[in-house]
Image 1 (cartoon, rainbow, N blue to C red):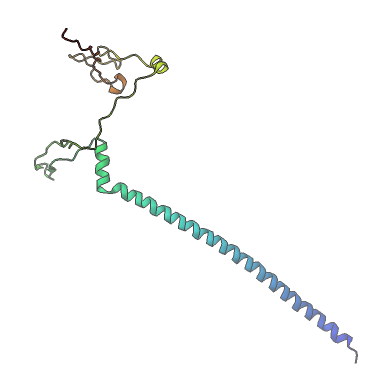
Image 2: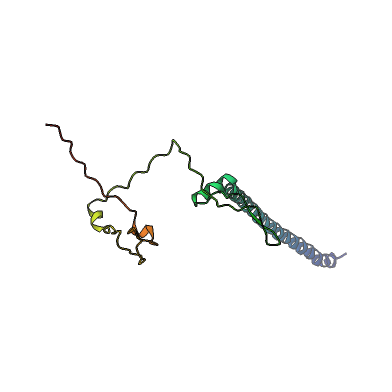
Amino acid sequence: MPSGPSSAARTPFVLLVVVLLGGGLITLLLLNSALNQGSFQLNELKNKTTELTDEEQALQRDVDDYAAPDALERRARELGMVPGGSPAFLGPDGKVLGEPSVATAPKPSPTPSATPKSAPPAPTGSQAASSKPPVDPGTDPAGTLPAADGSPTGADPARTGPATAPAETPTPPTSGR
């Protein structure tokens, strides 16, 4: 019996099996690579989510600290606000309910830890030459009319500078001889 025709019929089948196995292996390799890449992206996104959650919590703590009643009161006082008096209400018919009162600043309590502020140092040679001359209280750089007492009215205190008393020169003590 010749063995030729039977081996020729097996060759396409073996070739088909080898191509299917090779194609399956290549497909599994590509699928595995895609899953690994996706897991790396997922891990990176989880880490970024954790960082952003931590940052959000830190910002929320800051907001809570700023919204605390004592912090609000301190910042309001720094802005010059004072606690309000008794409130008055306007009814639907237009009548005022209650007695309105003006809010007044409470008397500051003396604090032993408060130290008096010292005057700024006098300008040195080059600074004194370049500084502006003092403003005469009789003139008004803002262009408003002076008040009856000679002080400018409506002038910006930052532009005119603080009013200072003339410095007194100390006199040497004299002996009774």
